[in-house]
Image 1 (cartoon, rainbow, N blue to C red):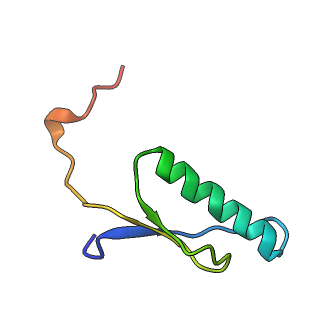
Image 2 (spheres, one colour):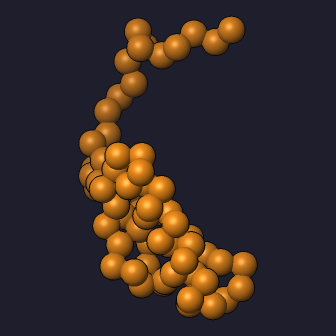
Length: 66
């Protein structure tokens, strides 16, 4: 939590940099579509970083299970 974010590691079924880059791009695109701002330079061997502000969950805001 002190690092200010998380790293999202990824791989492809085949050990191919082109395919790994496509997986990384799909992850970065999905994170962006969710309203986050991922940082990734396109390197298929580098994790995608997402800066987050970690907060403790408030018990009064947790939905009750049915």
